[in-house]
Amino acid sequence: MRYISTRGTAPSLSFEEAMLTGLARDGGLYVPETIPQLSHDDIAAMAGQSYEEVAFTVMRPFIGDTFTDAEFRDLIAKAYADFGHDSRAPLKELAPNHFLLELFHGPTLAFKDFAMQLIGQMFQLALGRKGERVTIVGATSGDTGSAAIEAFRGLANVDVVILYPHGRVSEVQRRQMTTPVERNVHALAVDGDFDDCQARLKDMFNDFEFRDGVKLAGVNSINWGRVLAQVVYYFSSAVSLGAPDRKMSFTVPTGNFGDIFAGYIAKKMGLPIDQLVVATNQNDILHRCLSGQGYHKDTVHPSISPSMDIQVSSNFERALFDAYDRDGSAVAQLMAELGQGGFDVSQGAAQALSENYTSGRASEEETSATITDMLGRSGEILCPHSAVGVKVANEKRDPATPMITLATAHPAKFPDAVEAATGIRPPLPPRMADLYDRAERVTRVANDLEALKTQIKGLIAQ
Ligand SMILES: Cc1ncc(COP(=O)(O)O)c(C=O)c1O
Ligand SMILES: N[C@@H](CCOP(=O)(O)O)C(=O)O
Image (cartoon, rainbow, N blue to C red):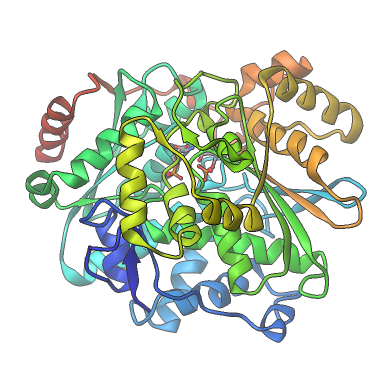
């Protein structure tokens, strides 16, 4: 299995190389050259299997000879051992044929743990074997950063520096990043929004002197391994509701397009998916684009679902690559236009996108009203991101087809929004009950590439 860049000019890489490389050297994102197929029987055989067994079957064809089967099984087992639910990703019925896929039972209470815990294990084994040390720099709107710090804290062979937008993440998210005491993990509060953090991260990857000097690696969904690990729960949830003999639909609260793209990969692998619904908050550039209005940047408006406050949605580039028949030069041209503010999508590509995705948005009021309403109807307390998903799913779903809405974070990560909607302040689980008492360690930095590079070099030299 080889991985190729969405911009067409970087060399193709193995799984291990793509995982450790992060952004392709032509600025693109790595994708598999071909998508492995699972047959009807392969998928049917997943019924009754553990999450870990399904994970092995789904991911094995993508990893080539990076790990032996025994090593890979062991990495998967370690990755999910600390999850707070036996089935890892349980389903709850919200209404007839509408299910919530709870992806928040990992150590940082968000879906990011599914991929990040595994990536932590994979990096450790791959780097240990090579005797190499890397510097992981990540950009976060709140959840990727906390999941990365949790997965890598105290591990040999890695320093982790997370850039988050100052004042734009929830207090729980911030404390999850700023309170770990291990000296190989660091949080930087950047004076900007998430798009600024992600843009500076990509600038660092495109600055080859810095990149090679610090041995830069990435664990944002730039990294194919992140997307891959998220494909698994589409299979596990669909199979538990009767796939492959029944079609399912999924609604995915979306920002950087990694999670919904994982659903698209599941579909390409053979999982019978009817609708893949992109649910956005008021930062609705993806919904506007998928509704035929082109991809034109606006300012980022802070919302009660802050992890989705994104305008430059990194993985949409992967979707465009397929929609433009894998023409890297066309994608490079679109990304150049995005640098100037935006682009229009060709008719053929718009048609291809509409065959795979549909979309909707939730305003702030609608998100809050959905949290209130779902507590009354089903007794379920939703986080605001999951509420965006449920609101859009209710609009889009066909009552005859099971709809699975991804619950991407635990409500306790966003207690203010949840309390405002329900009057209930959801408590943190016991294992992090002292989060508010722990000392914080964070450095505030300007949204400036040189200032960030200097900070990062200083931190990893300590
Ligand atoms: C809680 C939560 N929900 C949804 C999303 C959106 O996911 P994606 O960026 O993969 O589209 C994020 C951020 O990634 C998140 O942290
Ligand atoms: N919502 C994310 C944004 C970064 O997304 P990623 O999937 O590319 O890591 C976050 O919580 O940081």
